[in-house]
Amino acid sequence: MQQYNKESFHLDNGLLLSAFTEGIVAGMEYLEIIQRIIDAEKRAHEISDQVKLNFERQNADVAAELALLKQNYQERAERRISLIEAQEADYTAEQLASLDTQKALSMERMHADFSAHYDAYVEQLFLQIVE
Image 1 (cartoon, helix red, strand yellow):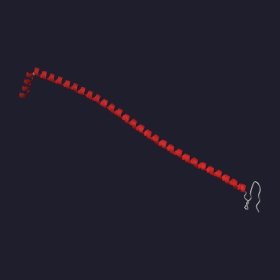
Image 2 (cartoon, one colour; image 1 turned 120 degrees about the horizontal axis):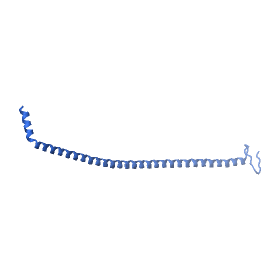
Image 3 (cartoon, helix red, strand yellow; image 1 turned 45 degrees about the horizontal axis):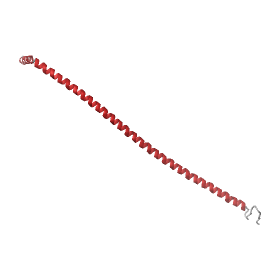
Image 4 (cartoon, rainbow, N blue to C red; image 1 turned 60 degrees about the vertical axis):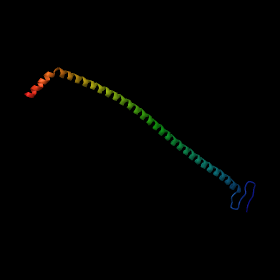
């Protein structure tokens, strides 16, 4: 037998209608909580994706900056090498010119010595051949 009162409605199986409706309300609150959890998880994925994207961008920026630094260093090194090569070429040319001058002076002295002592050289040579 069913009983009716102002606050509740009894069903044949003993459940109160007010408890049932409270359960529906609680179920709706539960669904709202679940929806909030799902929304929070979606937001967490969005944040995670954004962080990954920012990380990749920063890695690309660092790689580009590193490539630029390497290029600048390479250019500076090549300029320094060119400068040193030019200095060494100048130094080598000066040393060769100095050696050429010394050679020319030695040749002049030898030629002057030979000319001054030509007769003695010829006589000495003749004596060495004859003996």
